[in-house]
Image 1 (tube, rainbow over the protein chains, first blue to last red):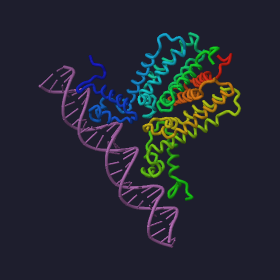
Image 2: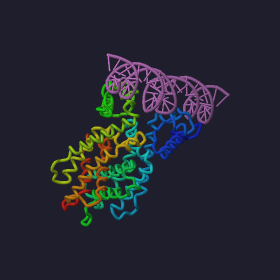
Image 3: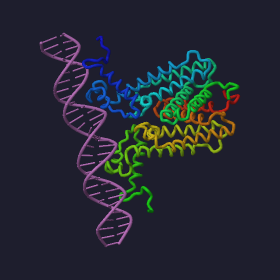
Length: 206
Length: 206
DNA sequence: AAACATTGTTGACACTGGTAACTTTGTCGC
DNA sequence: GCGACAAAGTTACCAGTGTCAACAATGTTT
């Protein structure tokens, strides 16, 4: 009764070990093709051991993706400036943190939004994904209240913001936007365009 | 000597047959896990036959993705209005056509931007992808020349536009933006936000 | 300590991508 | 016409995968 649902019994904390092994591979192996057997191998267990902790391969993928969303959300709230004096000052660091998360964890980020495994992954993590969405939503809502953001349907604005940053992140991961090659100019310009679209036009801000 | 590089010889036009079979599966099978053998099966040939026409599985994937980009570009130029009277009138139909292409061919669209197969797919289709990019670039360039679009780095604007539409398309494919469920409101609102970010602010357009 | 559930291992199955050897078929030089 | 040759398709095989069933070992409970 004093045990949490999943707890180590007789070997070690294998469930956690598997997850961490997988995350590690996700981090280091650039081109990662996920194989349960390889994870088991690196975790030092037999190829069937994971099945005692995950019903199937997809379940592990889902777990990893959810962890990814949690970490992304953490990264965003951490990047949120304490006392932003303008919309751009608030949006920019968050956006950069988002893109940075993606480029720092390309395989994980891809997994989070992947349709691999027959869309099964995406089906299960709506709440986590929406938690990220809510960060944006909240920010925009306060912006509208403060009068710095256009009065439009917030959900549409949030969708636009998320889609744009998400798209940029993917482009960056794919190397179509590599900072070393092209500088961060397009990235910041794109963010500026987003801000222009959200902010109420100032006389001198054309 | 009078033969083109790949021409049918003794059975039929298998190369084309394989591609079309694959495209067909891509179209109908919602959750598609690509297997060369299944394609061969449906094409009515043995599982090793495709290897006479494609060096490996990835090569076929690349071919399919390139076809996808070609079709996407066609869809965009077809959707471009003949005589748009405003930026929004020009951007909106193109954007909708883009998203529609994605939601109509989800598996194909995913494949085009997929990192599956170890990024190998994306490496080969830069030109085709950039052809799509150029459609956007061209439109924005003319907009700037005509004085309807803010004078900013065009590439940044184009990146923003593409990223946003791309991101929306993915969200739509993932069902986070299903039109039946939520109406097309967020979609259009997001496009409006994009337009706001691109267009030179009008006095009455807050 | 004996019964039991948990967790791990071994061995099998069907499937995949890929290669090699073989057979069929069309093309070409004579 | 006809044999040599190359193209295109087939069968047989390999290693590797996801998954499952049977079994062995360990910890928990009474």
